[in-house]
Amino acid sequence: MRPRLGIAYSGYTPAFLARHSALVDYVEVPFELLQHDPSVIEIGSKTPIILHCASLSLGGNVAASPDVFDAIKGWLDRTESPWLGEHLSFITADRGLAGAYAEEYAPGEPYNLGYTVSPPMNAHSVRSVIDYLGYCQEKLSVPLLLENPPQYFKVPGTTMRQVDFISEICARSNVGLLFDVTHFFISAHNMGFDALAELHDYPLDRVVEVHLSGALEQENARWDDHAHPASEEIYNLFRHVLTRTRPAAITLEYNWSARFPEEMLLDEIEKTREAMAWAASVATTTPL
Amino acid sequence: MGGQCSDHNAAVISIIARSLLEGLERGGGGLSIPHDVQPAFSDFDIQRLRAFSGFISKVQHNYLWESFPHTRSLLQAWMIEHDAFAEYRLRFPPVRKERLSRQQKMARVVRFLEEYLECSDTPSCPGLKEVLRHERIEWELKETSAEATLPPLRRPRNKAYPRLSSRARLARFEYDPLEIIGQISVAAPPRAKRRRCYRCYVIDFSAEELRSLELGWPAWSFLSRMDGRRSTADLLAKSRPEQRRELRHLLRQCSEAGIVTMS
Image (cartoon, rainbow over all chains, first blue to last red; front, side, top):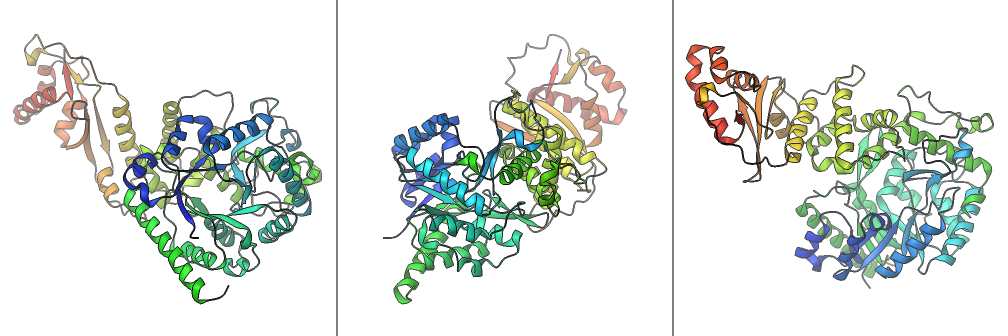
């Protein structure tokens, strides 16, 4: 069965789907957006929704509150999302351990970055993630997929490659993966490893969903960029991944600009479908 | 679960989170680390953390680019986007208690970028200031609500006291922002040619159109002296005799177009 192709929700999405609904199988919507603007769920009346999340802080030291879990469960029920994609990152942190107590950051609450950050990767954090995953899966009604975060710097305390960190988590749980091709491309550049060589060790058989987006170069590093299309280098990596795994879903993440050109999105959809068709043809002629 | 990871991991996460929220100095000496965790940070790339702080701040202001798309393109082309937003994060760390509207936040970022581009520590980016100002003027005009119907002029035009209406703005640039915008590409920053230029911006609510007109110096100077306290006759008296007929014609056109109001 061929993967479903979806787009990440942005301001232009309703108008785009009104004109091109046949091109898209689903819309990926962030939980945080639904919390801010519940009316976004109306898109689900015509197109299936997959829920994405950046609130559980799976890689952190502060668990999400019961209210957050209840809210996520509520949106999972309303969207009928088949799974919940969440970043293998931290987004919150204990203020007390930072050496100072900053009253201005909402006294009594943890730090909240509002953005996901790759955690220290070592044996302790593997155990912590496994424990927290078990807790999350008890509370959620659908499978959780772990998304590989982009690495922008080596986090102190890291003793493992990201591929080993994720492989270890997969070996000790039955969690599925959301493989973000662009994040992996960014990590390879910033951490100085060979993306294709590293992919050899990646547990791609656990990949359920794939993300694609652009990457920007600045300050001698690569950065995530959902306002520009994926480069040819990223597409090459994507095609390679498709020869190694059959994801259930592929999401084009071009959701940072409500002005993302429609023609550009149409091109990206076509390019992605061509890559899917090519990978399928390679699979029928070449054993994996 | 989340709260049971090693103390060391927890401390690292907390230190990084705090640094990202508070912002980091350009010099990189800003990490405050408890003694027992310091060895782990001995070879830490603080500059990259600072850039990441700017990256997060930039992403959290993605809505800005709907109204300032060319400014964004130029910040990226000149490779100062993350530095600008890292400085912004340092000056305005996200504070939960703050309750600013989106418009107020945008205005604050724009004011900051204008100061940042004037700062001697900021790399020179010819034309970027002009494009930012051009987009700011357009944004401010679009935010202006349509004026109520103006009362008819009851005295002769040469005895009236003209002033620029709230639907219009004048600006003088050292680089023409529209020329710069026309040259924006992903390949490299535009090669701006320094050319002083005078522009008048006017928003026409009935046509839902915003126009930017290039003016000659005499017209711009004439319009910029209209402050509602000098009469048309006074303004014309200060102009060269050979220009007055043209300026009277200009005044009539600007009055009809809603660029100038008369009282």
